[in-house]
Image (cartoon, rainbow, N blue to C red; front, side, top):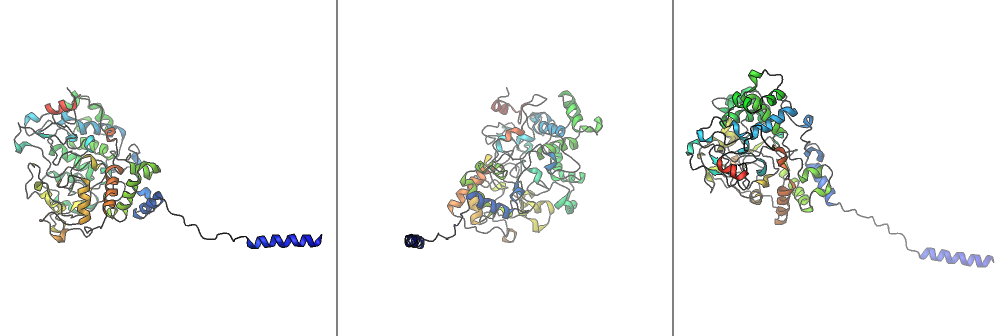
Length: 451
């Protein structure tokens, strides 16, 4: 029996010796696309975390950047939304036939991503609004010198909460980077900087005069605005409420809440990995990594407070008809047109990038008609404007070496990944005056179905 047991033991030992050793080859874990993108976002963030790019909710007032002298309140925002769209404020037009026909929203309306929808924004003297504003034309009854035509492409007013100064040259705003420019706050609407507000507030106040609007007490009282003003500015005596300053502060408060926080990229940042397509995710990786776009376009609005020269053509060089923008317009010199510092010439503010696809014109001079054209221009880095000296071109303006596939992905990210599909939530359903908006000229009334 002992011999049998020993024999069986040898057999077992023999089989054990023949059994192959377990595979100790380490398993290599391949990062998923989402893991790779989060890593890239964390690296590109100024804070080392992707949350740096997240925008607050529009009703989270404490989280929205604001001027300390113009704190956000629900009542102020409600008033500002209505004033922004109120065509009844067009009470001081250059030509009386323009009375009551335009508003701030004529050049900044929801369907066009709160841009103008055309290469040159037209307020007073424009007619129609079909096809997201692209079909807004010049009234044949208007003399050119009476037109309210933007001398440069109209930027969007969404995400202005993340901008310290306003306009392509940054001329509006008394704080931050503009504090040392007080020598230039003379002689025109830039004098409004002396009120001491941030850029959003100063621009809103100045625009009322620039665009020939008026805050008249009779209109306020006859159209049920007095209670709205009282709720927005209860600390101000009624006799002092109806001014450009307080109307502008209300409009600025409203503009600060106009955030593109429902864009797929924003939803993705907040944890919804299915909010973006794989192509949009790859495009975001190109944007923040090889494309180096995030070097200048950073933070919640994908903008910055810097000014760069990229050699793009000015508005007057467009193939499209342009009104009231001469070759030597100071706007064509960018920041230098405001500061009078030659080193600032041809440098323009880094814009926010959300909902650009809602309007088919790009660059400060509308010299590009598609986002793809802009991407190819930056990828090749060959200046198109002979007026811009090489010394004024940004050091970041160099060939990027992106492939066609990478450009496809990047285009997808910018076109749909950064597009908030519901900016209409920021427009009012109606106005206290009952007026048509954003325009109320005869053609727009038909286009908008107001009649």
